[in-house]
Length: 125
Image 1: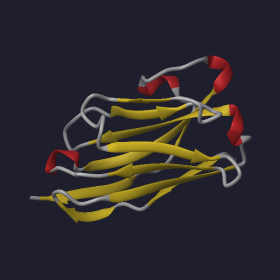
Image 2 (image 1 turned 60 degrees about the horizontal axis):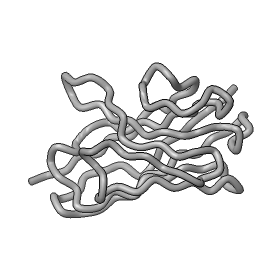
Image 3 (image 1 turned 90 degrees about the vertical axis):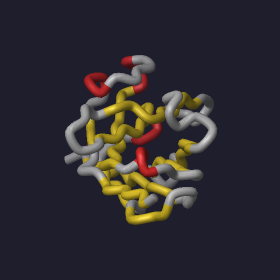
Image 4 (image 1 turned 30 degrees about the vertical axis):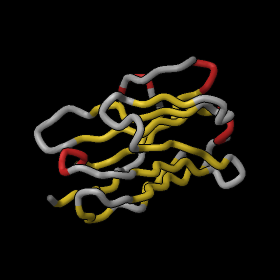
């Protein structure tokens, strides 16, 4: 079955950087737009960033614009999230998700068919 496996989370000091990876299996990766979301304790899951199936365009939430970069390597079936200048408010579980490209562009949590299990990112002040 389809699996999305995130990795790269951890504990980092404010101002530091982390790079998250999400490896996909059992799906034709190049047919999917990919997104990153996060969920802090007691909060709803929120959209962070998305990238088109080809990598030709990206989109970011205002809260991370200029600090986070989404990218993908279709040959490796992997999407990445480079996170710089991290802040304590970035602390959350981070999830990657896949949306079939024929369904169009979407930044809502309900628009994605497949989800990973999440990786914890903790930013200390």
